[in-house]
Image (spheres, rainbow, N blue to C red):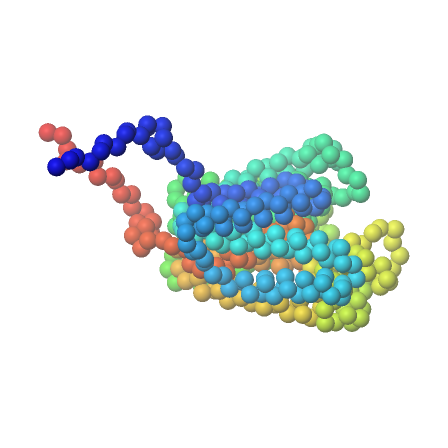
Length: 455
């Protein structure tokens, strides 16, 4: 009987070669980095920044596909917003291919940009599935928001008329933080502030951590007012009203969270009184006079009326996505030496550029966001899905209110973050064990089993 031939030993260096793991956490961090880098690049409005945003979005989608190819199985998580997003893309593609747009090149560039928004929203919703990933995302947003808000406040105290104290403005503006326009900075903070604030009023932080995240949220919220953006102030007030309603409607623990929210607002007011001074007071007082001026024939209302005349000319498919600044001079009813490149009302601009078809898709999109978010609001202060949904929903509401007065959704960095938050709000519930929820609810700490005590 002969024995089997001996197998030669495999060198240790060859036997186990560590392979890099492309996990959901890695992809989520990559997508978060793209979303949070956009505002630092002046809102990603420059051509090089737009190219970087689109390239990174495509790369992230490729990495997601490569990860599933390696695993040999496609684990796809559905989202209610995919159909309206696909329908809007098809509509703009139709405008471009059939030449119904007033300027095909601009429509093509905006088509690529909206495709990048869709890819980022897809990657985030495919990778943000567990409580631990929500915690990771919330920490990234909170830390980033604190850094950007602190920089903006510091820059506001010692301005020199240049971005980052370095880059001069080519066409004027009202700098705040990394943005040329203070309204767009306020839009960013409207979307970021709900995350630390929701962490502060829920079961996901306790003790000193709760105080710390509430302090971060207070700095971020105060910077909205310090920026001087009146639309941002109105949007933040709407967010706080919605959050108050959600807290009051809870059946149990109804006094703790509203009390904490009241303390948060008190800290914001104290911070504003300390930092804002006469400039903030003057800006707040001007809200009434500015509103009266607009109602009596201000520039924004005049542009709105001009937009309605543009819509009547092409009511079904509009003038083409991105074509507003090209077509508007033909309909402008007032004299100005400035180039009006946006409608200062995202709803009217969408109606002008995509007609009733695009506007109907947008309504469909938003209805799905609110309907699917509502289904996850039961006990939202105790569940990760509920907390994440409320944070994302508050950010969306802030931009939706602000969009009546400005054009945050025409700024790529803000638009990308808004669409990702909408997708998060409408996503499926997070995977979280019942045991973890119970332990967090009762603030229990499980000690590791170290074995029997030494004799």
